[in-house]
Amino acid sequence: MNFESIIDEGINNNKAMQGSFSGPLNKDGSKIKFKTIIMKGEEHLQIEKFIDKKAFHENIAMNKAKEKIIALMNDYKQLFITVGSESYQVFNNKGKIKALSAKTDKKAKALSHDKKKNYIINEGDKVDFLIYLKVMSEDGKVYNSYYDKFKQINKYLEIFDKALDKIDTSKKIRILDFGCGKAYLTFAVYYYLKNIRKLDFYIEGLDLKADVVRDLNKIKDALHYDEINFVCKDIKDYDKKDNIDIMLTLHACDIATDIALKKAVELNASLYYRFRVAKKSFSQRLNLMN
Ligand SMILES: C[S@@+](CC[C@H](N)C(=O)[O-])C[C@H]1O[C@@H](n2cnc3c(N)ncnc32)[C@H](O)[C@@H]1O
Image (cartoon, rainbow, N blue to C red; front, side):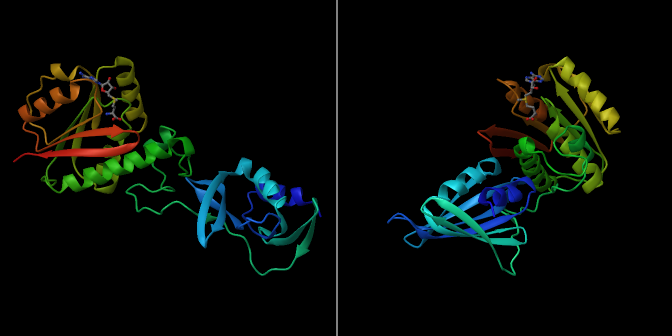
């Protein structure tokens, strides 16, 4: 039986793998195990190395897994490996690798390494705006490159959800989003209020960029998000006098956030937010009036 094709079987057919090396060929050889795990929705190989009875973990991308297992095999006399429901005993006889079928009742199962967070929007939920904006697939799988955005949206909604307790939600909630940019977060608030809280509300999103605003209005029409409108305007020129309930402004540039906060005070906003996003961490400042 060919050792490399056993590993290929696991990697190419997305079969979970687990293995345990024994008989180190080097004096300092430590006990090593590995298993398939899921991180950020993607399969990885987790190598577990025991040094002084402490376990150290290294998670590597699946396209590097074969190389890694083969390299480790050179340092050990034996490997017991399970790929899906098949198990093998692999021997290293002075560099000659031989694999034999072995019996086991166990089946390798890919374990999720992602901390299961109870998000407001969960992976697997088919959320129209996230599908439209290509954050998730039609069947609700979050694309790897958008995982941070997905987490940011959920964190934002979590904070928004808590803040909502402070205002009267029995009447129509009027929301202004100053400097909405591409409006992932504005659409998230819309989705949350409409589909999860089922409240009566209206959102106005403002941004300086005409092309962005034009696209946003096309998106909201395509999604039939009727209680939202995007306007191309400088925050400082916003001249409507109607009171608002919530002013959102996130990561607006330069002094735009300060102007937004001043407007919020003038418009009697009950809640106004300023979020700062730095190096993917998320901090918030919530200012409450009344
Ligand atoms: C970094 S983006 C943030 C977008 C969005 N709020 C978010 O956090 O995902 C900042 C946005 O504010 C807009 N902006 C900056 N100054 C503005 C102003 N004075 N009036 C309106 N929009 C402004 C920019 O065009 C940009 O799209």
